[in-house]
Length: 298
Picture 1 (tube, rainbow, N blue to C red):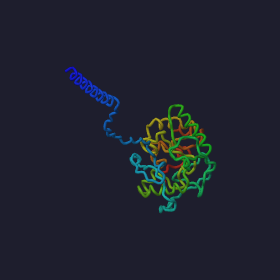
Picture 2 (cartoon, helix red, strand yellow; picture 1 turned 60 degrees about the vertical axis):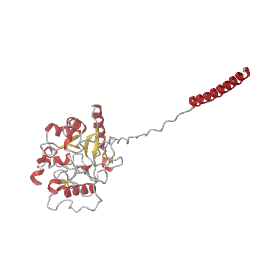
Picture 3 (cartoon, helix red, strand yellow; picture 1 turned 45 degrees about the vertical axis):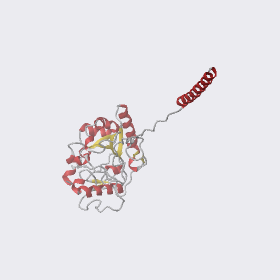
């Protein structure tokens, strides 16, 4: 009987050992096992589009920009001209009796609807002013005459010191560029309206190398009506004469100059002359005793 109980005890002990061994192995597996959860679906949001500064038509070489605020003022945004030689509009109608200026290289040369530059005139000493531009870096339309360029750099530096950051929009324009540009405006708006904001080739101040359109550094309201009243326009009106520049086409003088009000269009005439013109409240036509443009060329 004792032997039977010993055999049963041995069997029980053996069974317990087996059970313990199995439980122990299972426990080790559970504690050492890395349970991998099913991968969660990852939703990658589309990349946010970087906000781009507004481009002016000067920057968009070869493309035509549909005007908005410019149209409101009667002047569409300047668009790059098409290939030369494609224009059909005659440069200057034969019926217009224009006087050729005697000293085209003078800093105070008067170019308007009655006075034109000599044929094939190219300004001497054109350089690239060291100022910010909205134009591409190598654009020829950044250029100005040396004296005007130096004065422009000084004016931009003074404005920056006053917390005003300016940028050039368009300065020198070669004759062929002005020709194609004017003809595009004529095609768009008709000759009569185009002549209120653009010049026949040979009669544009931009061809002298002494004129430049200016905007704020952000390019907003560049060469458009909304530039009037901006802090940049106000600064220019109050300080440009100290550096030899004037607002060439002032408000309320359209019948004298022949062009709409352009607070962005600055013309270099030299400090002495600019201060005299501003203090007198006159246009260049009035200051130099020239008949109002509208009296001969409506």
